Image 1: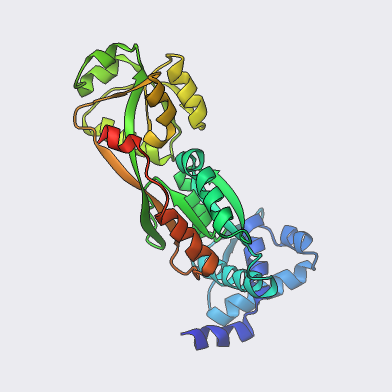
Image 2: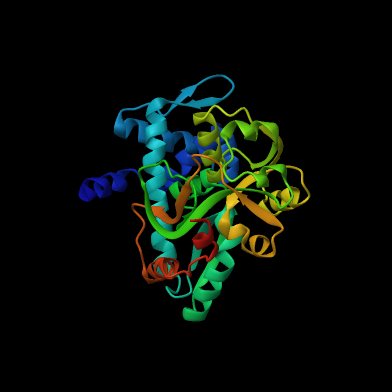
Length: 311
């Protein structure tokens, strides 16, 4: 298989793939030529050479723009994979291996809770390791892993693409919370229909936590009210503390507030969301020593005491 790929690359070069990707991105050969500082006839020639070699049509040409064809879409996936492999090879062999920057992704819950302490542990044990952090929702982190823009990530949400390897490493639990004086705190068990009376402060669509919440509420046909939709966990926590509504949140986020009594965990019927933060990486990712060390540190991350309290 690799022999056949290499044989093709003798004819179809990395330059062909780079030109094709730029044309696909901007949907214009003239614009691609400007961006790459080469002539438009060269752009047209390279695209034609790919089409002739594989007997395909990469684009549907109109008088205004180029539309990528179905075959072009498939070719784009392969070319992206090949170019990512070459980029990774360059990074690995042209830079000092120990000083290569590791691109670590984290979802917002993970980024707000365990990442600061985890990075501190890593720096103590592996001071030579350089780490660049990207924090966003689960959907975005998954996309970045697939596009090789992240080397590895720690997420709390569900990863859908089968090409992403997912290894559970850190225990977590999602809980419903309110202020200490909220009317629902007087109930030992809260029925799901009682939740319809009160507004919620929630994460945006694409968040792993929001997905768990929506699945639960839809399953029990709870017609809930959304007061706020927010990208920041700190903003959500402050909104609850100021009595704007309820939320669900990781117990890692509220250790101090549970201890000082300012927030209370609500016992909602049928709600039991134990979950794991997971290490994720692309199945084709070469796990070098730096990545293996990050996995090791994640596996040995300390337990959250509040988990025992809510179990």
